[in-house]
Image (cartoon, rainbow, N blue to C red; front, side, top):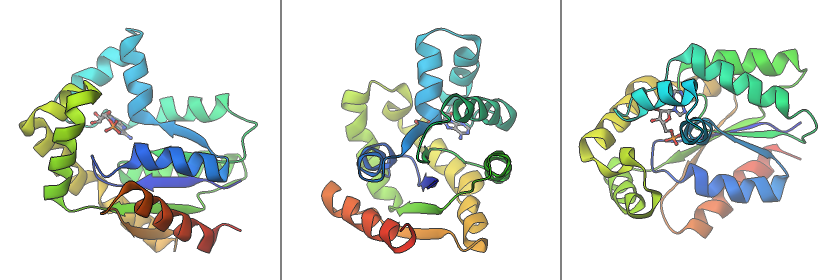
Length: 192
Ligand code: AMP
């Protein structure tokens, strides 16, 4: 199996780029943000709980997020590999993911980390808010908090994968196509 973590701050282009990686490498896409939003649309208890954090730009607690992710992995057994988008966002989540995959005799192949400066992220999120309909994209204070949470809790996760020799930092600036090609190059250097 080829299992990829697509990593980066909010607004880095993870969702957009995940689509291209899914097609080229035949991966199954798991976005914890999308899963939480689906729960919210279906008005489940988990959806309401997640919403109470995401409206503030905060992370949903690890135990809840990890359980949801583990269930999603379990539901999709016949796949060539996974691309994790927006997960892991904390070191305990990264450790849990390693454990879950190990139990399935597989592992993370590569963490592709999109590098985009903060000013550009804010611009992109402001634009995205116009058609995403996401309240957490529209409010500058929430955006600021999401970026701060990324820097404090999520950024250290790159170190976790660097220690395992599995991190590849990719320049996330420029047009979508250029970024996609950089990601493909980083993938092809590792995945046969
Ligand atoms: P995203 O669509 O990835 O930007 O996620 C939207 C929101 O969902 C985040 O701001 C968090 O509140 C929540 N969320 C998504 N993924 C995670 C995660 N791995 N851990 C904790 N909270 C998450």
